[in-house]
Length: 543
View 1 (cartoon, one colour):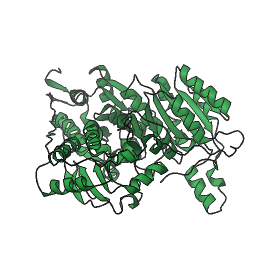
View 2 (cartoon, helix red, strand yellow; view 1 turned 30 degrees about the horizontal axis):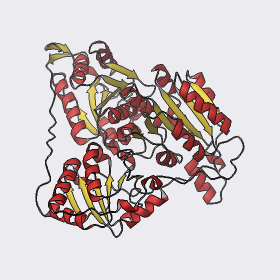
View 3 (cartoon, helix red, strand yellow; view 1 turned 135 degrees about the horizontal axis):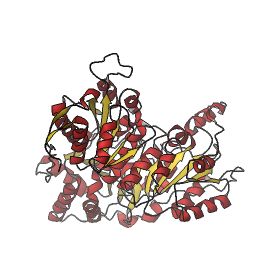
View 4 (cartoon, one colour; view 1 turned 90 degrees about the vertical axis):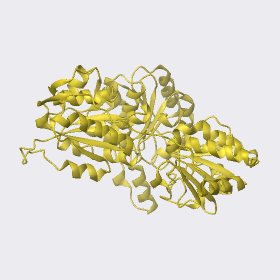
């Protein structure tokens, strides 16, 4: 317990963060935040994880929050340190990830400071929230307000901390704001009656679960079994129903051809906590002619993309249980839809093409199939952005949604390795597997690979190197134009990984792929496997 009484503001901020149950802080120190980081580590017994780039610290905190299921915390100094976080903050806001960024600010007394900017305007442009530290005396309360908002608003909150406050003194008393999360059953009423009526009358019902249903797995499975309905997830909920015989995996443009056909035959979609965006619905085609029952605890999510036929603002698990209760009361028989289906077949994606792979490269899909079997089963799966990612999403499994980190909320590349590091900090006893492209690794991974080495993390990086910006390469090819501007003569990434303190293996043939697979078993440091691919031999994105 921190003793009440006068203390320096930088100490009070660090202690206030610790009072919120935070034991890990990511960041990059500068003159406006270095004393906070120091006191958090030395005075509060916390762990400070230093990044090589400010934006990386935010990305690490985002992945940490996702895997650990708690608020992530990062800290940066002022000026360019904060502007370097714009993409990361946008990624977090679009992904609805709760985190707090402690951002130092230039002294108010020096409006012409070289690094002075309008922090509020910068932050709000990303979709993140902004909280101003008002005075030394109110610093602890402002920290509490930032944490409260991060939890309730489910987005990053940036706390602006004027540099001149840091060595001022003020009384310290712990202060934490409670977050009130009272769940309730769906009430009786017309909306409930409509939803149950549609579900009860469906001949081929299907259940779709999204990120808002992470904690309702067992209840939703109970409903699916009662209805004899197949189960599917959005991309972000990948792995939620893993192991269930009637799980068809991802719903939408990432479905297998057989699963896509089954979705087309269904007549009622019961959606729990899913955003129903254009990729999940294949631009609305998969829900055309079907009844849609949408359940979400967020009122603003209802009808955001497609207007449902019935909707309930409610907790996913409690609603699923409520549906089962009323179906039993009315003695509604099961649909027998699952009796028509072969779950294993519905989850099987088309095999690799048998055409000859160009020399000094490997077949991408065939390599993924071998890696799916060889990679550690208890892995946390992280994917960077790029055209390679949709095949990874389809063919590489994750144990559950918390073990699957998607860095594509803003459509950026170059965020994967940083988030992989944050995931590894959150789960130090589990291996982290990252799939990244060559462009994304050069953009963001190269600067942080040594961070993973310094932290001695158990990490396997599969670097998909087609020596091109793949999505742009395809656009030139489709228009019968020269794709030369999209192609690059990169260095050997395997050699770079080794020079940065890890172990790198170059894969240009099936024999070299087997050697890389063998190395997975004997790894003792971050391992990077560079798959050399032909840019004309990589499947198109499934979007």
